[in-house]
Image (cartoon, one colour):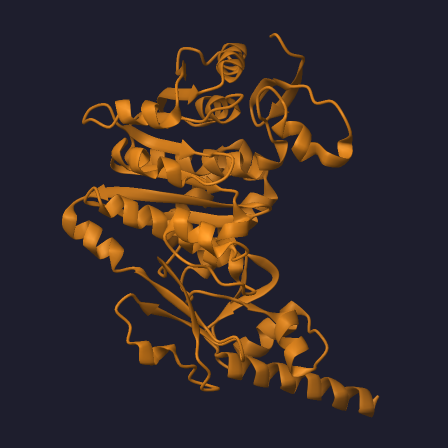
Length: 405
């Protein structure tokens, strides 16, 4: 290599990555200036790819062909080749010639060169070449620096019927409402600044894929998705057919949010403007979207991921296993989650332990679960008014207990 490298171990792979210099106080900046980008903080992202592909391949019961059009050091492709059974071939690409060289070296170093081909090619061109029948992929992983939307059209065209696409978005500022104009340009929807903005970000990404897929008479259905650290990640299955595409688009809508009392609800695209009035305080509600308003994961696929983890090294990643379980439990709830600290602050009560709030809601007959989006977040079928009432009761009970003591 014409630049200094160091050896790292991730999963079952041993890889060469660029050696970083400079202050350790700004590692992200140092990595962005490296000759080839490598981010060890994205290991959860790559671990999830191994687990999702293993579950997908097991369901297909045949060998699969993959594509990673933005491969960098090649760490993801090498790991998939090593850790997932039934991987027949992986086509990787990058526009950086130094990335191509190090990716080829890593494939050779890990003895998977027979499965991996690396091309010096722009991502959209690489995907476009494989947009024809018999040339498409079972799995396409698009993990860019920023937004994946410039690659959605070619990704959809290059995916087989029933294949999976994986998308990562790291441009969280537009997606979370800091720059709504940029979000509208890139994702076709407007975000709102709310306590559940990371869930909105994931739904906006899913909505962008759904509308792009529909243009090619293809449907999109999320099988697993999550938010972590500084990014959101979506895994979705694509199916061909105009009717299926129309049905997929019926899952698009708006999330209405009341800035006064924090009530929220999802409505379809054809919703009457009269529904934009809050049912509890009568205030005008603001809308976020259009975006995907149905499930962000398939609970049966999540179960298949948990089963597949038993034979994989990533099964030892406790954070990933906990994430899969939480995402599975969240699928039956409406969009949006509540932040316990935010509600307690609004009603003038001290913060309550999450477990106590969960128990109080469950005891009163409400469905409730934690959410992976936020440590202090919960999803429930209780309304904001009911939730505030229960938290107030807990606060009053605490006061009575202290008086007795």
